[in-house]
Length: 155
Ligand code: SF4
Image 1 (cartoon, rainbow, N blue to C red):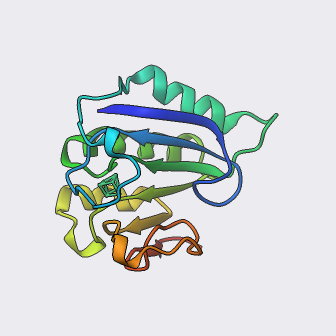
Image 2: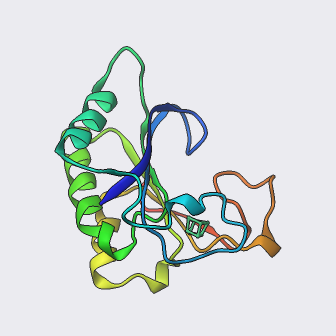
């Protein structure tokens, strides 16, 4: 898996202060996509063990409290990304169980295959669905268009 950007401090993508990873790879081709440069799974930088360690270190950093991890892109559930994302969320939940994990995907929840659904066991919130320009609404929080749904899997 490759990634495009990593923000060790982020107050925009999800609630509270967070760390946010924008991965490479997306097949949805939503009209009006704000992040077309991430579509190519080979673009960006290699997501390696060093990046996993960096995320864990930042989540554990007591100087600046992070509420959790946000995973966006691109699409974290792009088929080629799933194994790396699954390993990452398992690791974060094992080492930082108090942190919440939000994940944005262009697939709808009911479209996810068995492999993709494994990730759901380790995340707290899934924001699903393609961006639909005809339903875009800047007043929406944490989603771009009203067809997208915020699914909470934990309290
Ligand atoms: S799912 Fe997100 S990154 Fe992918 S095309 Fe749609 S808006 Fe762009």
